[in-house]
Image (cartoon, helix red, strand yellow):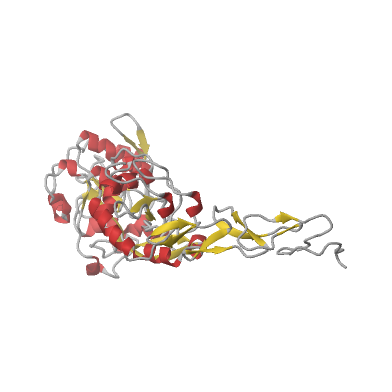
Length: 445
């Protein structure tokens, strides 16, 4: 018994998810239950399809954990897949959650929520990290952390960049003599991402911030954690949802609505009319095509109906080490969150009760519970059916109970069998599904 959650009957797992390791009160699923709809994935992919995968990207997959009304559903995390439908994947409705790129601020330097409005940054002058990055650092392509580690910057080679960075005009004039500018740093990742959207945003809204490119998300994450440790203010580019934002308690900077500059984007900031937030995308639930084809219809309906509220998504990420939690394994982080998230348990229980009972491979629903199929029977659409004569019950490579044909040289004249019988001397079974041949039969005669 863990946190008031009863021990889990492994029969009462539906067919919708892969194995999960036993941790924090979560039970390892019966390996035979891999027949269902594998992880459903809200795809966290943006940057117009050109960016690498964002660190520690998340998605959620439901797994029925028990039928006693205590903790019916485990939500799992797994690795991210592209936003675009790729070969071998099937999309199952949207996840009810939006993903977007944006500019964020570290909340450790800004009391309250004033940093959430873009106007705040047009007037903000209380910078303490002016010594952090000099023009020489930008031109040399390195940035030194307080630990002594030197990060390799990405030098912007676009026509609108100068010495590897972007200086919005007219608010950020660059002094060729002194090598300084009045502007501070807005840290972006890659100058090819989002096609100049955020450079134009800084320029057209008159924000006194130059764009400096870290070259990779690992570099940007290292810098952000260093600045958090030093309690220095920072404005940076990232994608939401992501566990790093949870770990930093980052503040999203709100810009004018996307519709205000629709159709005004140009990849060159000097020619762009962008002065608003970039549009978001609705995250999708995606399953492997092979899993979807083999799924029970009710399991698929369950996955389609399942929605994970934003607060629960962020809560789960907060249990992972990348989000400031203790769990190195994303499955364990999700499990631990669910064990204490009673409101989520209640919502999921209601959804479970709205769907027919789903039993794992090898069991059938009867009298309000899942009962084991008899010897020589397999589960098909919630009921146990005997294997036909000429076949026997076995386990496939995928861990499913299946009826397989008897091999040549063996036979089974009865239905509901778990083995085939070798042919008796003087008889043969020359083909699959063969029956016992009469004594003395000559092959081919």
